[in-house]
Amino acid sequence: MKVIALGCDHAGFDLMQEVISYLQDNNIEFKNFGTYDKQSCDYPVFAGRVARSVLSGECERGVLICGTGIGITIAANRYKGIRAANCANVFMAKACREHNDANILGMGGRVIGTGTAIEILKAFLETEFSQGERHIRRINEMDDMENIEK
Ligand code: RB5
Image (tube, rainbow, N blue to C red; front, side):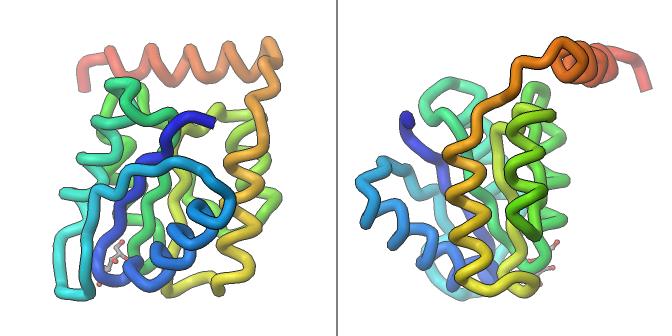
């Protein structure tokens, strides 16, 4: 596993510390794009930093955490080529890798507990894209949608 990009807002800060501990304990390299304390801040800033890092290839995948996981994944998905999935259980984390080739995991610091979050993180990091023909086709269809004039 290459480097993991991390980003959160104030509402995701505590859970992100648990994610960082897990990555350190398991010798998984990461780059922390903030936020770095619990002062109120704007989640799109951190979503943008992580999305750009994944798109540039500096980091292989990303983890984004806000209060619900919703705003920060919506923001990341504004970037072409980002497939950010907000997951609340292990089934979703596995499926977003196998079916959607998600490159960013979103989680809600106010939604799930630490134990569940770490199981979700493990599933996201350890599950590979299935390479199924129908899944590739659907991802290509989504990529095409990015180019349609709105
Ligand atoms: C911050 O209060 C909260 O709105 C944010 O963390 C997130 O849940 C937004 O989707």
